Length: 456
Image (cartoon, rainbow, N blue to C red; front, side, top):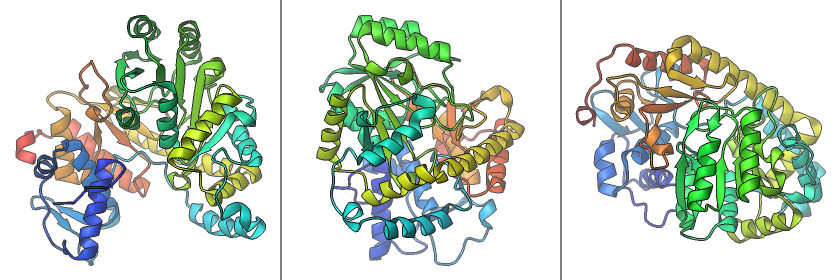
């Protein structure tokens, strides 16, 4: 039984960290068998999806291995019997594919940045807003989607999640309402829960959030803000066209409603669409993380506020929670922005994402897939007789594949659809991804589903 008491962060990561600690301490030994996903979820009092993600992450870290028909075990020191390409593939964690030269760039450029910079600027505490040079580099980085931005309106955050938590805290008090899509980023649900905020899900169509539903919700519920992912929506992969963005912006302005735009994927398209915040800058908080377009290891996001005063409030909120973005990582990223390295890495990720989307289009039934041709993930609707719980359990048992069901993204009142999100970037190679996608296609096209109780 993993001891997760006192561990911060997402519950699934707390479970994995507890497993890692138990293995390090010898409480869990190589070959020990772990409980089924269902049994552990019930014992810890959490939902099944949480444990599914935990086991997938533990396999990714090399802590566990699953044997079809036998169960999940603490991994031995010996290598798995199957080659890596045929082994388990994580399609749950939405990561950008890693460019082949990223490790070399990190080794080379960290040394360069440390060698050239004044150590007092990289190895100390400092303002959470970032230096003027760093904010100017950030403003130039977001320009393709946001347009010209005064660097004084921009704040550096150690990732998008702290920025989301800070902005929610500034805009709403506990018990107040935030609007979002009926299917939305799970991190919003976590942050809203931490702040004691209520969420209301709004319907969408093939162009994204429904403007009429937004206007009606503003009239009926007096919300404090709208959270939105207009480009390569997570999880539905819809990119809102310009006309829809303009319509949403008009309603925000008319209703006096604030916008939190999560623009995690805004720079992935070859020709970025202007951000929703571009059309209503006076009412928008725009968050642009580097996690999906460069690397999650950099832990940096740029938050653009409507004015300098709000930027100062965001910096204060971040300082109270996470103090500051890492000066060392920020120095590296700033140098990359200035010398063109960031753009080169982004181009490599975009090219690989495009190739993987093309691979998926050639394997999965087109009628069931919703995706952007340069995106990191796709949305897969499940045909009858599958339901999402049986489908993810079948993939886990038969192929060692992890995918995310619609429940993880669902915001009431509408029920979650029979669908799953497939993340294409975490697979180590295209061949490994091809193998995983063929397994999914086989399940969709004729493998008789096992019942949920039989699988777990």
